[in-house]
Length: 361
Image (tube, rainbow, N blue to C red):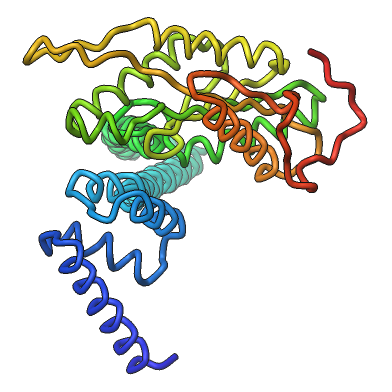
């Protein structure tokens, strides 16, 4: 594709993005434009999938939903840029330190050569004046070396402080890139990374590994009734409820929208079901009161699907079974837990391939 073709394609994307903004009656702000341009150009399949789902559920999109899509699917690359910039700065500092060390090595070699020359001159010297000149030369070389060493030490100390600071900033940015900004638990990116790691460990060590997928019941209705700010508070409350019922390496993540995921390494299926029920019961036992009005907003209920990892299977099948179980829990009346061994739940044929291990409940 030549430059002209690229220009025409980009112009077509831009035109369609603006058309959709007008159609959805959204202001043409840079953020809103970026969301729709990314959507029509299909640069981010997760954003496309989430936006299609949102459009299917509601014909009218509001600014809060667009902001959420931007934060979930577009803001993350900005954090990646920060990581890259910090990495470049840290590499620069390390290069500077290496140059300092090379300079110090050169100074040391020069000093050694000066000592060799002085040693040669001292052989057979009996004249006091000549000896004085040699000693003065030696003192000057020694003083110069001490000065160079002192300067090097100061430069290394300063560089060390800079590297420590950059390393701290890099760690903070990486943590930020793996954290959902609204709920302060792991985001989808972190979930995707960790499920791969935990599955690999389960395969290697032949240990149990389970997944919970949970969805807040009637969340859209709750949002429409009480507003998105209150809805955001509910999402934060659910995130805290998930974390409070986990331990060790268990990981709670915001999977998307009002859907959450929990990874339970080294956990048997029956124990995973127990954890899901603990979370569900803990949340449903709390009544929500709106601070500004004192209005009772009712209780939060969640539905959960639970699947057990089968050695050697692909991650998509593992997640798909949990999602199927979650759908079954919703279909059965919500506020309950369904697992892959429950009767009446049907999976895709590929997801039903069993390994040779016995399921221990």
